[in-house]
Amino acid sequence: MSKQFLASSTLTTLAASFILMATTAMPAAADTYSLAGVEAKLISVQFESQMEVEDIIGTSHQATGSVTLDDKAAAFKLEVPVASLRTGIDLRDENIRSDAWLDAAKFPTISFAGTSIVKSGTSYKVSGTFTMRGKSKPVTVTADVREIAADDAKKLGLGDSKWVRIRSAFTVQLSDFGIKIPGMTASKVNNTWTVKVSLFAKASTK
Image 1 (cartoon, rainbow, N blue to C red):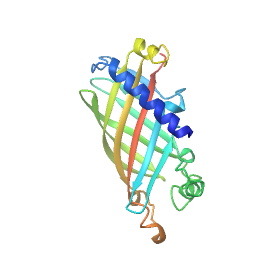
Image 2: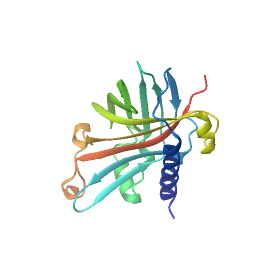
Image 3: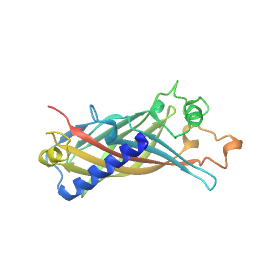
């Protein structure tokens, strides 16, 4: 059984247990949550290409960043190391990291920084900047954000602090970031990639 499958199963189990406990209320005062020290099994960032001939899913369980929740103001930052992406085929992973694709040597991270965040229930509409291969583009995404109270977090084995679970999905165009798909792989690689984020973040110590 693969580590990726175990990580995904653990994340799904935690999320399912949390839904039974959580309420939809969000914190009234500003709370900041961080990915610092969060276990890899609680972090999943995927980049997915779908074509008739072949599907490609690159997954990372490494990320840094933070989220600040507030009724009036909020902030969101996420950064993923390009070298941490895995597709299940070593040669393809090397190609993705090469200068023809993501150029990990020159641009080691992919990042998203939210600059405008509007709350609606448990969802946030986040407008910000997505940066890949040294190029930045404006992106607006909808993120489902649910708070996990400290008592519930302890029951789930997460520790004594408060946590949040964040889920979001959006699309990016490779061509917008200077990536040209070679003719020999055009039938296998889509110019449109779906980015899926599912992670838990822990309340920062003040």
